[in-house]
Length: 85
Image 1 (cartoon, rainbow, N blue to C red):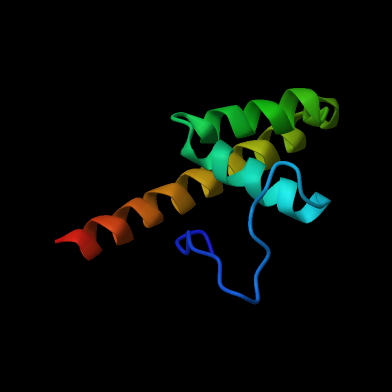
Image 2: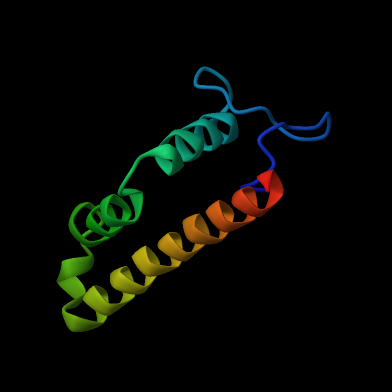
């Protein structure tokens, strides 16, 4: 789903002014393109979603989510590079 930039006829197209699901897809695509988005994602989860209130377990959980997001971006980069070669 992350790699498929073109939506098919069965899928919702990302749109800022569409339904809630379309807005979420649009925001997710724009956020994913930002450099350093795993760090921003960690800060969002840890600070704005109040992950720091859970103490050390909250820190570990938010770190793992940021790392997972980094792995997703790395894998997508790897797959797009292998397709262009």
